Length: 254
Length: 262
Ligand SMILES: Nc1ncnc2c1ncn2[C@@H]1O[C@H](COP(=O)(O)OP(=O)(O)OP(=O)(O)O)[C@@H](O)[C@H]1O
Ligand SMILES: [Mg+2]
Image (cartoon, rainbow over all chains, first blue to last red; front, side, top):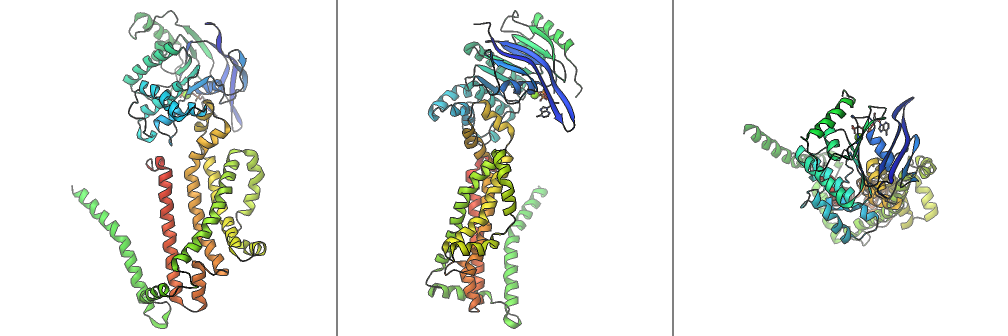
């Protein structure tokens, strides 16, 4: 079972119509994610990472190509998929606690049960004491952590994370990286993690898929299964891989 | 320090100005009413008329009774307008099919002022309560519906995507995402509708009624009792302002999360 493909993308392409012109965002991306694997998608800014993740989530339709989940063709939203959104998607009229409990609410869990269930993850992301706060009373980083707690609390087998730590300060970012690894270790989830940060990618990933700038296509795949965990940013092997990826990453002049 | 003092002085001025404008208005009124030709009753005359009103109610209905009669009509029409307008607005905002089916119809009906319906409504419902309520319904439906529709249209796709990813059904999306997102727009619609309803009810009462503030105005006009007319007008203004404050308060309660963002 360990080596079954949990998610498979087959020649995914995406073209956006911009008025009269067509703009290719993704060009024939194929990849697969093993069950319980921590896969990192690494690419420069605006290369199409969010679009690809939205296609996997079933929120956006690919222009061509297929998504398979558990070996079955998937044409839309899949119940096993949970997501942390880059733009947070924290609902302003709900308290922290209700935001985190939202997935369980949709499943019909009672209020008491879903609050109890969500509390674990609120504590985990360090928002204890803020349960009854509304999003506008939180900082950007705290809002991001609400989105993370919600995705964890949804108990999805497949976790899609779109630059989930992007708005956090360096210190929180490091501790959240360790937390996600802990959760992943404990609950054995399949994680697809999007980032544009090489260091973060090497610290987290079983495998890293490096993408080209737009239109997005696979440039290189790095297998880091042999890099022991917990990893160390100053480890010689770590720095070597980091340097190698750095050489192959497209420079994007913003 | 000096800067701060100036700001406080300015604040005080801002607090005085409303009182000043009312005093000026009263002064102007006194001036005009004491002039030649008796164009308008003086504040004193209006006050005396109001006192007499409590001693001898019009049509055996107290002032409160007349206010309540008008309000009840507005409320009845508004409740029907909300019961149909909100679901229709949600439906049209949510479903493109429903929208393209219903929108032309409403686009056609919307520019017709409620008052233009008076002949038809009288023909169908007579001159009693039901025709007035039907008129108010017609006047208040559009603001409620249009605002609900706009509210749904303004919902960020991201919020809906969040619900979809976490497995919400269509019904849950409408209930847990669309409704709360559109709530403040719906409240704005209801506020506009109350204003419209207030206009329509007065017009309807001026045509035929034996209770209500519109009836009071017409009665005053018929017997050349201008003080009564002015008093009724003042009450209409006060009640309208009170309703608006009440609704703003309700909106603040319901959308407390939004007010603080500003
Ligand atoms: N709905 C859309 N309609 C049209 N174009 C879009 C749409 N969504 C994304 N794009 C375009 O696709 C390209 C890739 O966008 P995407 O958001 O996937 O980048 P990204 O890799 O996630 O960037 P970042 O690292 O900044 O998050 C951009 O040029 C963007 O303008
Ligand atoms: Mg992105």
